[in-house]
Each structure stands twice: as C-alpha cells, then as structure tokens.
Image 1: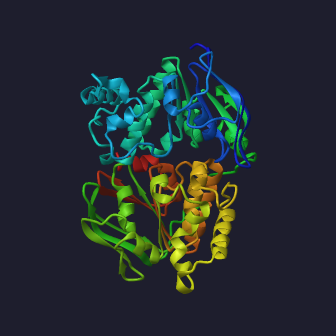
Image 2: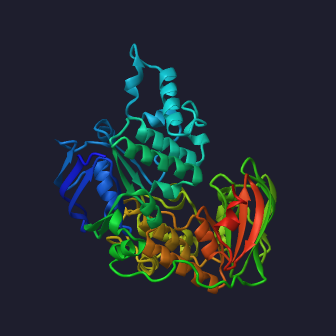
Amino acid sequence: MSKELLLSAKGVNKSFGATRALIDVDVEVSRGEIRGFIGENGSGKSTFSSIVAGAQKEDSGTFMLKGQEYHPKSMVDAQMHGVSMIIQELGTIGGISVASNIFAGRLEEFTQFGLLSWRKINAAADKILADIGAPEIKGSMMIDQLNFEDRKIVEIARAMSTDPDLLIIDETTTALATKGRRLIYNLINEMHEKNKAVLFISHDLDELMDVCNTITVLRDGVIIDTLDRSNMSVELMRTLMVGRELQGSYYRDDFDGSCSDEVVLEARQISLRPSFRNIDLKVHKGEILGLGGLSDCGMHEIGKVLFGIEKPLTGEVELVQKKKKVTGAVMAVQNGMAYVSKDRDKESVILSSSIESNIVLPKLRNMQKGAGFISPKDEKELSETQIEAMSIKCRNRKQLVKELSGGNKQKVVFSKWLGTDSDVLILDCPTRGIDVGVKAEMYKLMMNLKREGKAIIMISEELLELIGMSDRILLFKDGALTKELHRSKDLDEKAVIDYII
C-alpha cells in the first residue's frame, strides 16, 4: 500500500461559545489507512470529522486534500472533492424516495431535456445499493417504509455514491445490527484494498482493534496520542481517553439474578403485525429483564407496545400493582413508566429545545401549582440537579440539545426520566453511542435502580451487554420468543447466538 498523504490538517481550532471543542489539532491520514478516532463524549472527534466532511467550518487552521488546499462549503461540496461521511443518528429525509435520499443535492446529474429522468435515478440507486450489499432495498421505495437499520444503509449508499477517496464513519456501527455491521466492515476492507482511507469513530474499543491500523486518541479537544498496530491495546486506549485507569469489567461482577416475586408489568399475548406475534412476558420488581435478538426480530417494537407508543393488534399490557392497562404513552408516564428509544434524536429528545426543557418535560404535570403555574426556580433546580448527577458536559442548562455530543444527548435522555422517579424503565439500546467511561457509570446507575426495586426492561443488540447486565434474558427471532435464559456464570455468547440467528 502507498503511504501517499491523502489528508493533512494543521492547527485546527473550533469553539462553541466558551467551549473549545478542538485545540490546535494536527492530523495526517495516508492512503490505505484505516484511522480510528476515539475519545470520551465531547472530546472533539465528531467535531473534527464534521469539519472535514463539510458539515461545519473550522475557526482556524488549514486542510490539504490530495495535495490541494481544502475548505468544503457543504457536505455535497465535500462529496464532490472525494470525502463522504456516514453519521451516527438518522440522516435520511422523510417523505421522499430512497433514490432521492441517495442523490440529494445532486439530482441535476440525471436531467434529460431539462427534466429529471426517474428511470435513470432509480436504476443508479439500485446499482449502488446492490454494490454495497443491499440489493433488497430499491431506489423507488419510499424511505418511510424502511426500518431504522435499512434507512442507515441508505445513508451508506449515499456516502458511497460518489466513490469517495476518504470515508468518514461516525459511530454508525452503534446504530446497526449484524447485517449492517457486516456491510460496513466489507466497505472498509474495500477502501483499504483500493488504497483509499477511512476515518472510523467508535466507542467499541475491541471493534477499533479489529478494524483499524492506526488509532488517534482525543481528550477535551486535544490529540493525546496516535497508536499503531504494535502498541494498540484496549487498556492503553481506555487510560489515554479518560486520563486515568479504568479497572475491571463494565458489567456486574455478581451472578445473583434474584429479584422480587412481585410482578409489576405483564404483557399477555401481544401481537403487532408484522413485527411480532403472541408474546407473553412479565417483569418483576428489582429485575433487569433483557430482550435480545437481531435488529429486525421485533424486540424494539415490543418496547414501544409495552410503553403504549404502539397499540397491539392483539393482547394487552398491564401495570399489575396498579391494576391498570397501558393504553398510551401519556398514561404510561403518569403511572410511573419511562422509555428510552433507540432512535434518540427522533424519539427521545427535542433537539431544538434546551437541556432544561428536555429534562423537566416528563414532570411538568407534577410541577404545576395554582392555575397551572410552573415555577422557573423548580425547573432550574431539577435540571441543574440532573446535569450534575449525570455529569452532562454543557455550557449551562439553557444550551440547546442539538449542540451536544451524542453521549451527552443520551445523558439528557436518562436525566429526564430519572427526574420522574419512574418505577418501570424500558431502555432500548441504552448505551448506544456512549464512551467507555460513561458506559461504566450507566451500568452502575442501572444496578442502583435495581437495588431501589425499579423494574428495568433492557433491549439490546449487544450480546455481552445482555449477558453482563440481565437477571433474565428473553431471546427473539423473526417476531417469536425462542428462549428464556437466567443469569449464570456459565452463560456466554455461544449459548445465546443459536436462538437469534
């Protein structure tokens, strides 16, 4: 492989108000390189990659791409220069076709006699989707009929549609299950074989070790070190990221899967076409119940039905202690339930609102005083208490959520529900996009909630997380319950995988 320099960044700085996101960052990426970028939430890795991809502008510094000065005006401009980016959160445009999403900003390439040729547009989209390994998705489909993972695959197709020299993957694998991850890894291998380059951002340190040939560590906007294959280790990366040594496992070190006999939530013969059918489940006081399987097995939709977001075709969900049927999300919140969605930006936070507004939202009804008045002092106290408790990195409680890193957005999601003191928590992929230090804190938080007698339903595509944290695991395949497993020191991935694939 050639060591020809592809991208060079010198003295890059970027600030958001008083927060310095990047401080004199220097990076060089050569052809054939798979460069990992790691750091805690807010370390600057996504900020740097978004500048390279044309999503925002640096305050100062210089970029060279393929030997030429490089300052993209937009993400489309960056694509025209050979730089494409796949983001962590959902980046498709609703209400239009798959092909329109793939060629957004570039449809004029398919004009014929001054008119758009949709036959050519759809055919080109079909070819790109087939080339990346997703021929079942067609350009003529409406984007809204696809599930979360397939919409991410459409974003991958858009990124690859210009045959980029530099592909930036910003925590995308955390949003994908087995099918999507395999597709991403194949593309990374192809980029390497074609002597192109990849910037790969991930919180999964084992994944970085498997995929990357160099890894750059950032902390508080500063590059701490760059490791090559000879000195990479998970332990060293953790220490460089957080500035301290992280001891032991993230997960529970006990194998006591006991909980109260008291059932707090029960689902009886619930079905939701076409996602799942005739599911029975119970969750007990003080239990962490794990739901596992591949992304399209129906477990994410089960979480929505349990919380009342979706109405089941058959069956019912009951809060047993209160003898109340779950009839909707508002009713669920009023009766002590909480829900953390996998699709954070779309379903769990209001990006254009402040941290404070998001945190107090589920508790507004309880905070009302005479004539519906809500005290600004109470809002301030609640939000500041949660910001401190969750160590949310922000300027102040009035900062907009859309300005936060992915991990800090997730902390806001947890904060708003912790402020309600809910008894039943449904957590759908709760540690997706969260760095190693915060992951450990989240797991400790879940254990504290368990000790307080809270019932937790944890939906996860990560087998180690399910095995490491659950008292009991329900496994799903093709919309059906295939196996129930109980916490045990002998439980491993091999014991699980046959029931989900």
